[in-house]
Length: 270
Ligand SMILES: Nc1ncnc2c1ncn2[C@@H]1O[C@H](COP(=O)(O)OP(=O)(O)O)[C@@H](O)[C@H]1O
Ligand SMILES: [Mg+2]
Image (cartoon, rainbow, N blue to C red; front, side):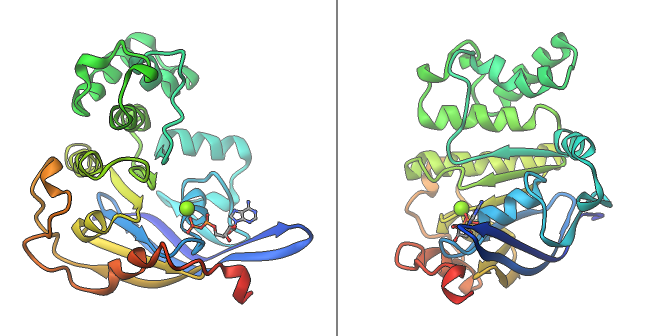
């Protein structure tokens, strides 16, 4: 598969209360088109910072990120926004849907802002809502949808401009395990049907185990990058609480499991 993302010596330092806080300490990573990758690691490891930079919402302090061969550190803000709109879709832990608009309108919104034809958008958004299982909820407002349904709308919205790269930061962190499992299945389905490269930051061990590639960040460094044969998952809710038929390779999910007890932050060792 052709390479979609090339990251070299990615470093990120924040200025905080007059102090320098180094959060990413030199990360090298490549992503191929069509890959599905989990990012795991203890709280404060730099996962969200990494994902934001990968999604061009923030810039490296040092090093570079290339998306489709374009170095994001060389772009002006207009070109960067353009690249982001064309190439990247985001799903966050909290869906950030607009409460006054219907599910359909929320999905259409990025396209409306990008000045796309309304009728085309309506067709695309309708199809996406059907794909995420919400064909019958198009006219509902977010307040009339369950948490899982809201996250499905957010997923459809992230896809409306056909991004090559779909980034999700703890997309099911706020959902129960059965609902999470169903949403996770959707990410795989999207990857299959659209060929979208998917990167998911997750604490969910079941999900991380089911991913063909797991990247572990620790103290702002890449601690492990493991590929394995994907573990077949029973679809939907049945995944919750069940061990996969085949034991995962090892280690990759360990850090995520430590999340609750591991409060180490890069600052402490800076
Ligand atoms: N804008 C910011 N300014 C200062 N510090 C930040 C900023 N964003 C994140 N950090 C710090 O960077 C570290 C890593 O944060 P984050 O990337 O959110 O970690 P994770 O997602 O792995 O929990 C934390 O110590 C956090 O406080
Ligand atoms: Mg985070």
